[in-house]
Amino acid sequence: MVKSWMWGSAAALLLTTAPAWADLKIAYVNFQQLAAESPQAKVLQDTIKAEFGPRQRELQSQAQLLKTREENLQKNAATMTDDQRSREEKNLRDSEREFQLKQQSAQEDFNARKNEELSRLQRTLIEEVRTYARAQGYDLVIADSVIYSTSALDITPQVLKQLETLAAKAGSGSADAGTTKTASKPTPGH
Image (cartoon, rainbow, N blue to C red; front, side):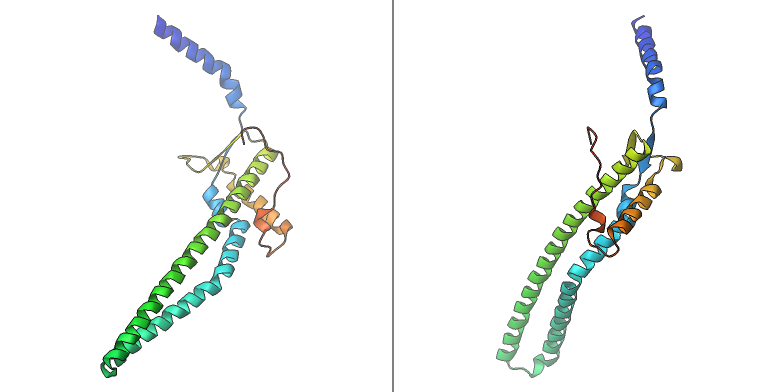
């Protein structure tokens, strides 16, 4: 008797809430695709590449120089005095240690800058998805971690078009093209 009352109550609750569920407008957005294909992401990649390219080329040049010095030492070791050989080996070790420190420092700087820009990109993408969802009247937009979704629910292409429009309005080649703020009021809970 108690079980049937509980099932009845649960069924009644579902029936009374069914109209609310029927009116929900739900969509899915592939956030990873937005982060990879948006013009703002491409600007970010170009900016990082331009910023760290010279430093990377310098490190590659130093690595080649060290390799050449090491090959010369191996080739000429037999004709060098013990003092010359040990002095050159010490200089080479010191140079390699200095190079490794420069390389590590460059990698840390690159990672910090990349994370900073990715964080900015993520904020921009989230805001643009919210702006699009509000404009289209969506009640819920789910990102990633979706096991199944029909293509009718996927708004990723539409948001990508909006991001392209935003980038075009911000001006081509601008490093801040992907970080333009949209003027919309945040809704509670967002």
